[in-house]
Amino acid sequence: MVEFANLVFLYLFLPIVLLVYHLMPGIKKRNTVLLVASLLFYAMGQPVYLGLIVLLSYVNFLLGLSVEKGKFRTLLLPVALNVAVLALFKYLDFFLGIFGLVSNDGGFLLSMIKSLTNGLNHIGFSFVEPTTALPIGLSFYTFQVIAYMVDIYRGESEPESYFKEFLLYLTLFPKLVQGPIARYSHIGYQLTERKTNYRMVFDGAQRFAIGLGKKVLLADYCGKVVADLAVSQSDGNLIGAWFSALMFFFQIYFDFSGYTDMAIGLGMTFGFRLPENFNLPYTSKSITEFWRRWHITLGAFFRDYVYIPLGGNRKGRPRQILNMLAVWLLTGLWHGAGWSFVLWGLYFFALLSVEKQIMPRLETWKGWLRHLTTMILVIVGWVIFSHTDIASLGKALGAMIGIGGVWAPGLGTRLLNSLPLMLVCFVGITPIPRMLGSIWSGLLGMQKKGKQASVITPGRVVYLLSVFGFICLLLWLCTVSLVGASSAPSIYAGF
Image 1 (spheres, helix red, strand yellow):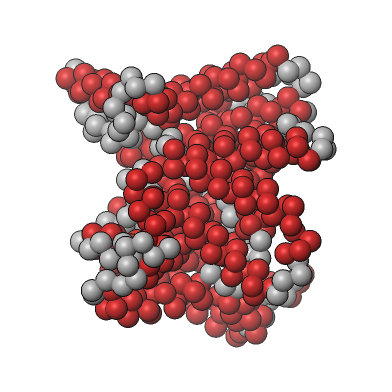
Image 2: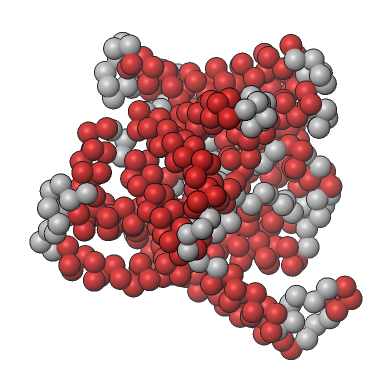
């Protein structure tokens, strides 16, 4: 399972967990419910890796207790161990392929794991064969552990004293698969001191429903258009290639930001405040601004744990460029073990390097021109990101400059049929939905503070009923879309 856009999760797993959780007295018992639910959630997706995650978490718990403030040698083993585990599962086949030790499609580690799974099944277990060698969420898990260890070393956090709370922090199911990357300094105190009220649960349910709608009603349908264009080869010409690129541009945003909304909303229903991960990135007027608004927690991790420790911009321009190169090579590789991801990282490194040189000149441009230029460059970046092999990437980029013709039969019908979806997506990437929500809540008195915030008024009753109806409508529409089918796997779930 390990997907929120899943009927079993929506109508069985989540209601049971919420009910049992809120019936339990005391934070300790509620944490136990959450921990069991999180491990069960993981086991429903990759049961063969559950033991690995628990064991690795226990080892990290012990290593965290051994890290001492200011003593770098105590930090080396924890960081090296977690990087090695991630490298083994995510990059082994990639590097073996570079040296010609496995075929280009890899598969060495996966075949080993499948053999182990079959062996366990022969002695009485019932594990489903994994379809990937990478444990779900391992990249997000690794970065959270590294941040935890480094923060202890810096004296910014104290090590967790109880393994159960530490394991819950790492495996909390709302953020387990695709983040956001929540640092222990942000989450740790919430493990024992959080409080949940009806307003927080209500707001969390609203945020979850909006995220679910983004994923099921927008991202998945954009993905179907992209897939249809690829199957029909209608994306092999100028118009088709840009049409496909635009739809993927929408798909990846509504897919990942939708998941983030669901994760943050779920966290709120359990009393957790998870960090924001998106802030209207497609309104940016520069590549620098875009990366401050997109996947915020990943950018903050590389800034605080790679870029600044390497010297940041404090050691002259050449060293700054070198530090940026290191960050973007790592960013590309973090997203996937393949040359296209390396190229994607280098692409944004080049754009950012040039942008820093000419920013004073860019700031003289009209705002709309800066925004349009930025979005075109981002779209090209997503084209690089979405093609896993260099040959298909070359064809896609060639089509975008007219190699292969301008038009294809049937493309007009696909464009017309997709216009309503594109219109909704265009509105969805702007501040308009936020503005409408803010206006509606303000008109009905939901933004008052202090003693007035708890007063029940007709306007507030109307607001609560309208939002409840909105939540029910989104759930109904998503359910209709999911019945008899399954939501497309989240793009970032594989990272």
